[in-house]
Image 1 (cartoon, one colour):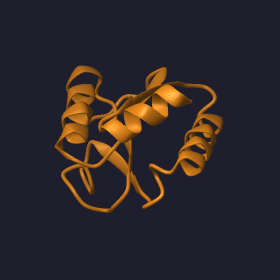
Image 2 (tube, helix red, strand yellow):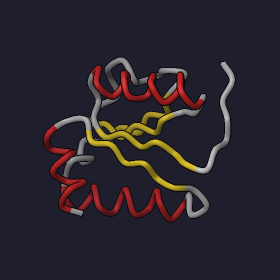
Image 3 (cartoon, helix red, strand yellow):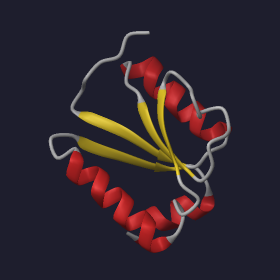
Image 4 (cartoon, helix red, strand yellow):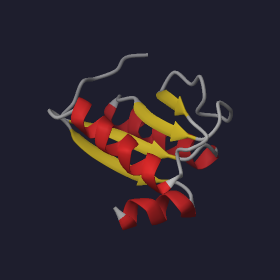
Length: 97
């Protein structure tokens, strides 16, 4: 698989098949990997070649979520972060912050 380094990074929050579908769409359109923040190291995106999966049971905790996304953005200052919530709790957190 070939991947490109572009001006943006897709970041998806969740762990179910919706996440994999989003990552697959980004790969097919742009040949980029999607960073995935899920609660548990399971599901179709875990160990996928088109994702970089970060599991933590606190990923949907308000304080941890905000710290996590801010830290990720700080580490990737040169890129635009496209944050996508794939689950009601993650959509609510993204809307909140």
